[in-house]
Length: 567
Image (cartoon, rainbow, N blue to C red; front, side):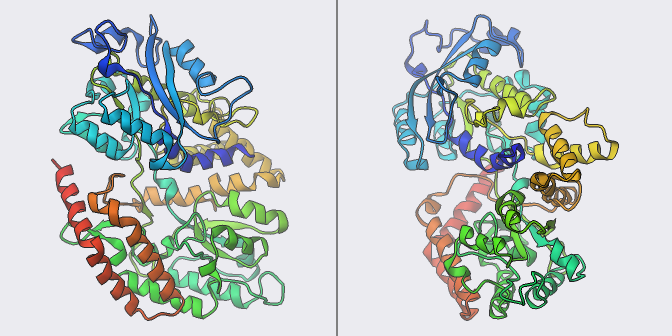
């Protein structure tokens, strides 16, 4: 698989990988002479000589537990305790990381690993350092179990790590700070790469001499032309204007971007009203005209008549059949499903465009709060700074000036080494503007000397594509200087168009835990019914039912969170 595909894929998987990583020891009950106990009033002084990227001498012991699953693959003779990253921690940084136990983390909160970790936390046996979710973080903070990492971060974070912490405007670090104390290092992650773009068959646009879309009305005109003017040359047999699937929101054939073009924000998005209160986007008045238009498009045959019975993978078959020309979707769509479809239709080309607006206000693509993992340290652990140093190592080896993705991220044997380190964070600006601007500049100057290893791979792929290598098409359509998804994401960033969920926590409120999944399913059912032809009154019924079925209480809890987060 192309390395760029791996780099794209890790946007989605890194946050889950980070959530599953954890380290544990019995430091809470260790004797005074244990390496895990505190024997100094100033624990940072003992390690100060090591520096942000220096080696502990003598080495320090960090005992741990770990969750892994069947997707973790290692070279022959190696495992989670014995691999490239485990050896590097020990040999380069003087960190003896060992695991007391390893458990299967498949199944999220219900996994064997998570259940066992919850039991440890409940019993007070907090590990030396551990990756926790928002709920666990809140519990440990309230119980006074966590080390204050404010000083450790200030003293030991490299300039690059500190820069990463600022790239999202401080959002992640703020979520890890309670009463002025940094009680965790968040599993940094970018949300810009989660923003929707519009993908359009550019070869069809060229064939039909269609202008590029500037407004939502322009997009409708392109849909109609694709459906009526036989761009695929099969005699007009069933070209569909807009991709959709039964899940409504997905990596492609995704309707969230369509709603955003109408300034509507369903799918779990909380927005601010005119009074500054948080309200749920999926029940606001902006939803109704978007639903009406989707119903009209479906009735006119511009949306797949069978979308309500197809998941995204099934809808993707229409790409290969040369019957779809427009989809809202992810920045990685050039890899899947477009690249597979191009193998059957080599003349196929797609270009990315910003989500257009239905009026004179620019559309703002919705993105979620990106942090789901917090790395915390037992307040009794002697070396709280070790978690900061681990992040320093990751950022430098993956993404820094000396970074080499092909060594530390994906091995020469195509093994996913990015899953092996104990901590992981994804710099929010790494891809956009990072990779995008680096490639654009290198192409303009024909000089890739300033690029890191990951960026240089983009440059090499671009040059190969320009020389006729069609296997590099997906890389160019994702990261290229023009017509690419990264170019669109960069446009969003430069113009401050991203709309991040105003409920900036991955922790569900009490009523969310009981009701949220049901309410989201009701939303999808309502949208599907209306698209298929039900009265728009179904939206009003949904809003009323949403409020009575826990929505009003959730709204209160979300606003209570907002008020408390300002303290």
